[in-house]
Length: 96
Image 1 (cartoon, one colour):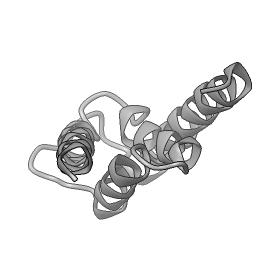
Image 2 (spheres, rainbow, N blue to C red):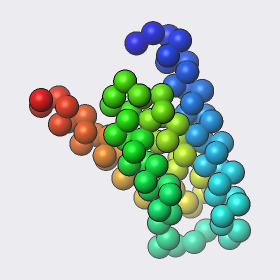
Image 3 (cartoon, rainbow, N blue to C red):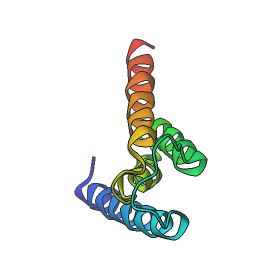
Image 4 (spheres, helix red, strand yellow):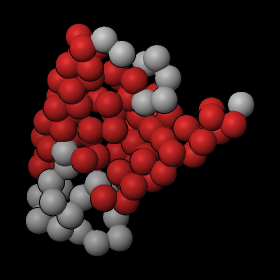
């Protein structure tokens, strides 16, 4: 992996965090809501978990950064599902 692409992935991850933070502050006015799974953040985390194991990992870091950047109390479940998806896909790729 070239250093340029690594830096691009880091910048993409930071942009994903900022977008996730802005999204969560606009959508959720309360500091914390229990038992609420955000469908957009969940789908982005799953897609990001899949893309992070492909040559499109820069887009994957942007998408996986979205739920991580959400305000405290939001995005935890979505992020864990995205990371588990990334690990499962990585395991399947290594077996093939």
